[in-house]
Length: 372
Image 1 (tube, rainbow, N blue to C red):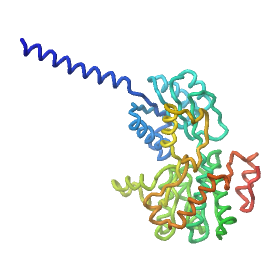
Image 2 (image 1 turned 30 degrees about the horizontal axis):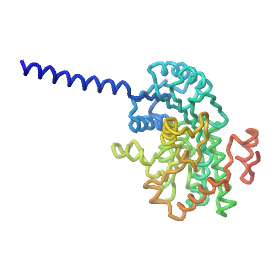
Image 3 (image 1 turned 135 degrees about the horizontal axis):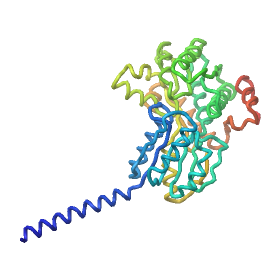
Image 4 (image 1 turned 90 degrees about the vertical axis):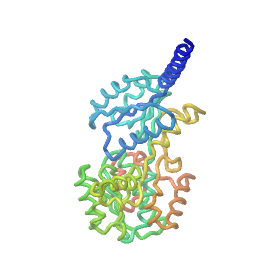
């Protein structure tokens, strides 16, 4: 009888622990990541990695919802459906297509902290539980051009972009960096800037070859998704060993593609030609916001610009960068970043131009100065 009582008590304790653990699991915070689709080699994949990193650090249960295509109507409908799937403490996702209804969602889900990235300057969010991350890509692009100008052997650098507001902000900063390198650093350089006719591997590959064939050796294709096309073109011209390199975009594409190549070399041909990547730092900024929401509340709600001095954007000092970039050039980059942080250098932004025509003049005339 005593053994039976002991067994019953033992089982009660075991089930008690199970119930306690179940309750703890139910109390675990939740974060939703919402994007078009995973596998874009770009900002969706970056956010996907970021949400997993955040979930692990803050002990959150994470959920992924993909709406499947770059389609505004589909994005909006899926957005509301996604928010209904559970009670979320945090939302993370790119602001594409949904930024006009963000405040409506925030009002309906007041206990959720919404964090949107890649928003764009000038967008306003009014809700106290909405945080927009606008990357100052003009500042990191400025540094990209400086790096290319300091590293070129042919005296000619290149940039391939697209004609849209955020991409033109990249272009504005890059052009400002090239002009600064020539005028203020006294470097004897020239540059080519072009737009992709379409965002495809073949278009980027052809544009890269045009750049290399016209004397550029340091080229930046501003497209994370199509970077392998740039890597292949660089490889066919001799690669980084002969001075032909590319800059990656948004995240550490060199390390990411190196891991892919380790499993299947043919899947990431030419990755070693990525000198470094010009980054948008989603995870670190989202973590700062989460810490602040649960702490001192020093970061104001709304859409904020995160620049190179705030670590919102930047470049990576990975193994390839350290292997190929001389220490004096590394020091010069840090010096210029310090001047941006102090306000001594003010990098123009596409959003500062009064008109598209004013931007086009700045883009097309090598001697044109920024005029607001």
